Length: 124
Image 1 (tube, one colour):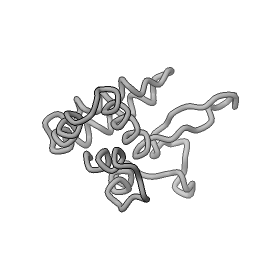
Image 2 (cartoon, one colour):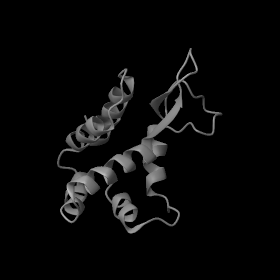
Image 3 (cartoon, rainbow, N blue to C red):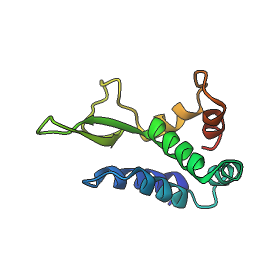
Image 4 (cartoon, one colour):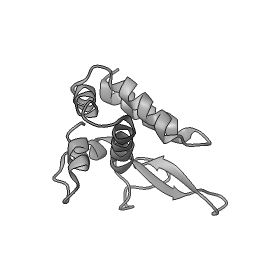
């Protein structure tokens, strides 16, 4: 299995749980990436930040790149975290993106961001 395949599985497993845990997903994502260049870049950047800030950066990067919070059905009284390629969204929905699209989106030029976010975007 590739590092990217492991990451995709980690994301899908995390959103499938009844109660979503962003921190647990971040730990699993780093583990899934193993010794990849993305993991090495993250740890290189994390050495320059506090643990709290580096966790925040990784959580934010994963959420912005791969996750969407949509209304939980059948009762519309709360929301549920999902991946952008969920079956709940069809290809015509502007929020839909394949896993590969999410990886590419991260590589596109981002709007003006803080120095922390710029460092985070360079990780993956």
